[in-house]
Image (tube, rainbow, N blue to C red):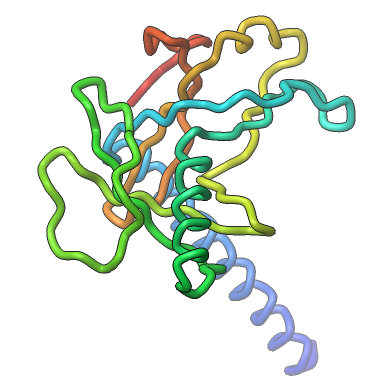
Length: 179
């Protein structure tokens, strides 16, 4: 075998191993986020629950997004620059860990005990959190029709991962194995 061919195989093997390491580190990070993240519930705003092209899913919109959008609009009318990048919102958590809008983050110091910093993204003029859709098994649309809250796990940076959908009483709408 020629030396060039051996080096080519070596490069392929090393590249494959690096890809596996990177993918597994990303999976480990998400699993850690799910198990160690702080629980927070965001109230859902009404949306269309069906897409024929993608199967059954619920498009998600959050009341918090609407409050942030309103605050951003008020900032712009006050002469402040428009925010196009990712940013944070400060929320107050009630005794059920439901998040309530407090203010847009402005680099302030420590938060109160009942406050949390959550990351949001402004894309195409719309405020978005971790996801804008919840996919479920075909034929289960009725089960999720009563969804009123999304349960998220937030890490120390305010990044959110959607775990499940819940009704008005915060009961899980599907068989849930909540960490």
